[in-house]
Image (cartoon, rainbow, N blue to C red):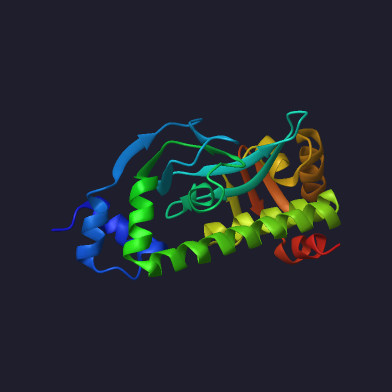
Length: 224
């Protein structure tokens, strides 16, 4: 019977073209470990010596300005792969990766990743596809910050997070500070904008919880 780790690796997109026997070979070279909230997996200018495969939990990729202001690049969920940019690029990380909650990860060494890429070129293609999606998402966030005002950016973020949950109307697990960092603004500004949306009847706000009451209205706010 296949192990839990084997089943998880088989479900990861970059390994989808591999046979069960090939996945078993990868399984023997990976380690699975628990990670605690707040764990920093890597930081800027550190060498990329490992690839991380997220099985459970959430991980945030972010950068810090010279003044210490945090800007979130991506929030990753189960099934995500991170650390690949340093492995196949310049060899150095350009962002922080931090666990937002208790989780479980698989770790592959740089040597094992390079061996798999040489052994199975199709895996390299899946890496390229994953990096392309990550780059597209980063470009989209940059465009939002550059061209949209705070209410439009917040409405866009709430809609995206609600869609990620599958319901289309619930965002939970994020503080006002978390939302502010996704917008590239201050917590007070995010709170004021949330309250404005609440007063307009667009959302309902609770502790680390936002319910979308008027999706059409929120979509209109995102386009302003």
